[in-house]
Image 1 (cartoon, rainbow, N blue to C red):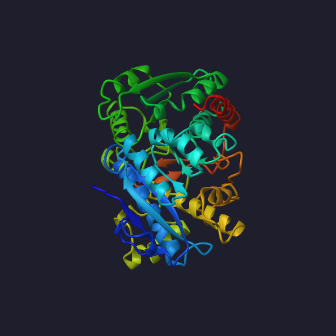
Image 2 (spheres, rainbow, N blue to C red):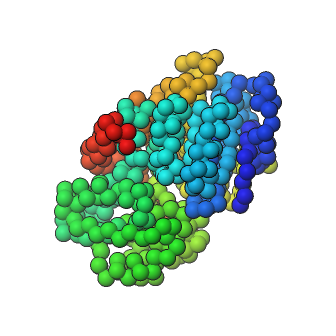
Image 3 (cartoon, rainbow, N blue to C red):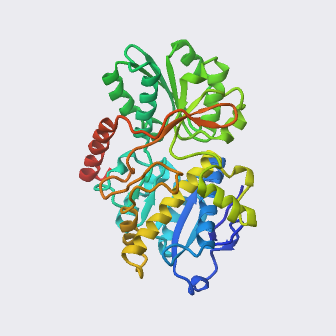
Length: 420
């Protein structure tokens, strides 16, 4: 897939409007501009394409219905290929052209852009990426996960393992297989604290990025005879990890990933072979949510979809819709506070940090973003692959948030002191 600079507005079936068009083209309408430089071609590939497709389809839905708060959404989309110079260039271009929000969907990119976003007061969305301590809005006012961070996801997984063992993990062995990057190492502090608290033994097995060769790791995992396994990566690393876990005979009903597991991964691994594997679910999957039905009827059904119809309702697609609904809700709240703007980063920031008990008509758990909590409450659920779809095996719940927030504040306090 090749992407150059594109701009997207209502009615686009694809990324069809060159960004080189003069801004005056949109002068007759009040607009809010987002910049979405993401990795379409290097590591995250189909993850990004499905996520971004969900975002664009939701923006089309909103714009086709007249916008939100009197504003239309314009999204500038580029491929940064997980390359920092390209991502920084895209950020600076977005800033020059009036973007008030950026969503890079990449942990290394998000980490690199934190100082710029804070200085420029441009809202950076770090859903399922970036720094987990960005949940602390007092330290990171313009960095907003708007979703369960990696520490919370680890806490949810451990709580599910504990439930499986009827309330006690004492004496159990948990193996953590992860990509050897800051993203892959992110859950380790929480897993280590919970190991002491719950009495389980933790063994970590890192693999070299991007993770397309893990053949030396998984026989060691098998020989460790773990009670549970957590695998932690994205893109190719996830499908390779799951393939190796299956090949080494690990029981799938004792294996869990983070949010980064989708139907598309199952197509690569083998839908039947992966039956039983668990994942963290941050929003409802499939096509049953009202907003997904609306997209199918009013966007895809009218020939205005941004990508393949068969991807509508996949986990990654729905994550994109989830984030788009929160972004748009931020615009709506900002427009309520200041209907005539001016449309700036601080204007949108006030809206984003006023989101209250928002569910997008049942797509996501009740989410409240405050000046202190940018994570939104820390609720998720666990789903299990049944061979055809991910089926939730829990209700929405939060777990181990005392441990998570202790780690958040420890790291955010250090950031306040050192800027690192």
